Amino acid sequence: MATQPLNTVRVEEHKLGRTVVHPGEVLRHSLETRLVHWGVAIFFVLALLSGFALFTPWAYHFLSPLFGSGAWARLLHPWFGLGFVIMVVPLLSRWKRAMAWGDSDRRWMKRMKEYITDTQDPEPSYVGKFNAGQKLWMWTMVACAVIFLVSGIFLWFPEHLGRTSAWISYFFHDIAGLIMLGGFFVHVYEGTLALPGSLRSMLHGTVSREWAAKHHPAWYQDVVAGRDAEANEAKPRKPE
Ligand code: HEM
Image (cartoon, rainbow, N blue to C red; front, side):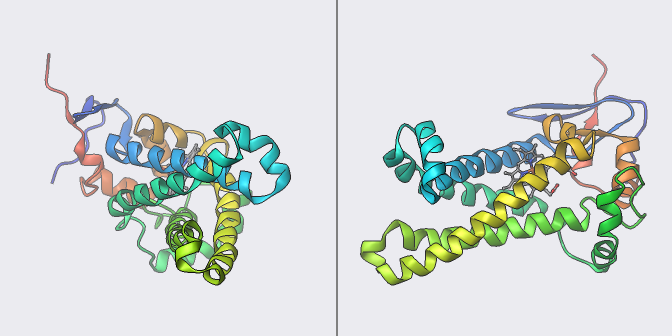
């Protein structure tokens, strides 16, 4: 089994680009994973903004000009939503194993308050690639994507699928939208200000070994032992 040497430059080659893992770093998210994540994020933000433009008159006032007009926001919103749902599929397929819920996640949930109030403390040794809070966000996103899709189809074609089902769909569509709006703010805060070094993993693909050992100790052990498939996509760079 390949172990990760500390002092060699490793490179993940991909037809769309390369990720360089410098000495003292480990690969956390491959280029493919990062592209899919940002695809999800872009479609989600566009769907969110165009959706809120249709949600309340005051939001309509300042959000609809972003899309040209209210009519354009109405026209584009279902397509942005569809883009979001489609992009969730490859994200789920890449992360479904790492996101599986287990006993350690139940333990983590009991100490969630400590996590929120003191992010400087190292995470418990059982925390793997994602902690239970991150898994909760992932599965909320998947559940909301399903709700958006099903209710969205009824709202898209009310003349064919019936006005009553469209009214019921409004309720579920809007609840899912509000849950995701709240989750989005928490997620962006957690991915940037709350945990310095985290955003780098989604921009450049890598984190420092200290960051990995502190925030995801069980995952770091897997990486060091060569058991993390994604981290092993980076190969030692050949001498030039
Ligand atoms: C636009 C601002 C966003 C930023 C700055 C951001 C940042 C990040 C970062 C840094 C990670 C990696 C965390 C880690 O490796 O531990 C991550 C993961 C993730 N992102 Fe985002 N993201 C954004 C938007 C979104 C949106 C809009 C969604 C979905 C609607 C999303 C869904 C996810 C999921 C499911 C994960 C994995 C679980 C987690 O780490 O919380 N992200 N994001």
